[in-house]
Length: 75
Image 1 (cartoon, rainbow, N blue to C red):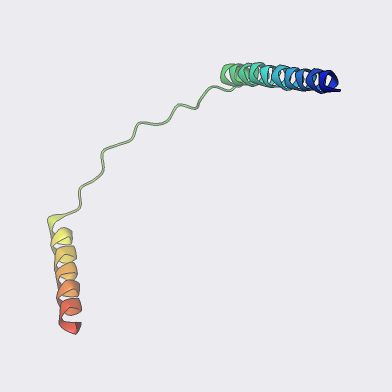
Image 2 (image 1 turned 135 degrees about the horizontal axis):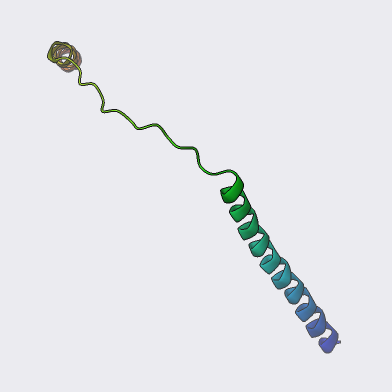
C-alpha cells in the first residue's frame, strides 16, 4: 500500500514537472513569434515641455498663499 502511494506520487510529480516545462517552452516560443512578427512601434520623440510664463507662476503662487493664509485664519 505504501509502495502504491509512493508510485502515484512520483507519477503525479513527474506529470506536473513535464507540464510546467512544456509551458515554459511554449511561452518562450510565443514571445519570440510575437517579437518577430509584431515589433514594437516606434514612438515619436518627445519635445521639451514649454515653460509657463512668469506671470502665470506668480498668479498661482499668490492663489496658494491666499488659500494657506485663509486656512490658518479659520483655525
